[in-house]
Amino acid sequence: MPFRFDDIGNRLKAFRLASGLSADEIATQIGISRAALYRYEKGEVAKIETLDRMATLLGVSVPTLLGVGVEYMASAIAFFERMRQIEETAEHIIVSSGPVSYLLTSRKYDDYLEKVFLESVPKSSDGKKQGLQMVAELMNILRQRKEAYRRRQPSIVTVIAADELRRFLRNGMVGKVDMPTKTRNKRRERAVEEMERVAKSMEDEPIGVQIGIVEDTLPRTSFQIFRQPDRLVLAVSPYRLGENPNIRVGVGMITSAPEAIELHEQTAENLWKRALKGRDAADFTRKAIKRYSA
Image (tube, rainbow, N blue to C red; front, side):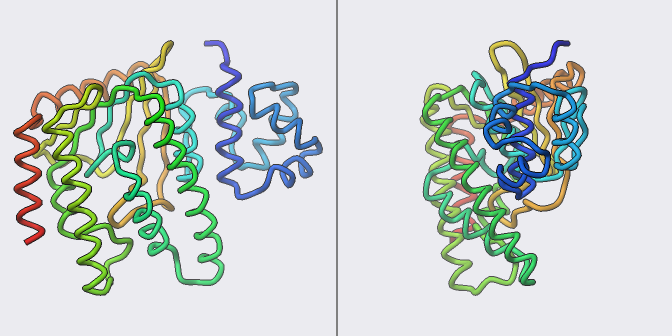
């Protein structure tokens, strides 16, 4: 398979953002200009030796930057930046995650999501500084993803686990367990507002958006399949947005391997066949809202 130089540049940018180093710092350490670094990030790879130095500095392998095999990312920033890049040309997206696909959430959701992330930041001075920087970078990437989705409107099919929905309504949008009662109640109200929005989408079934609910217990990892004009891409994520998030621990995976794609497509198809849809899904969601907001 020939190398896709635009993808090489995209991977390089994702790992550069995750490193916490500025473009100037990286350029200086590997002995090139900042302009040359940006050219590499556009896919203009001039020398494999320079790419090798970049890979060493960023703590990844050259095959990973080249896209040989599977892309592994132990950074939420790198993973979601790659998601953003892939979504830029995706025509159709299949999502298995819960309790709601991030791309379909409201702008108000982002404001609370940032609070949730900040609540999950370690209290130690070193960990706090790094955590605050990570949250700022991650929120910037996530907002770019959402704006790109709203601008392009690729079709999306998402499957929600009923258990995830119930937990979201029960706990609310919180970043840690020991929240004051008043705060927790307000966060539950925010979760209810978001799920009311989801229920309306289920009922209205707007063009290009399909949402189903399954009673099965789904894996804690989520996955998305992106259909681009010339290929399919699978992303498997250990990271969790929303209630009690995980943005620091785990290894994300991105691949176009046919076997991985086929197995996940079969899984998504089987889940969709068993899922509640349309008015049935909306009724289920509103019953859960009534139960946990009482």
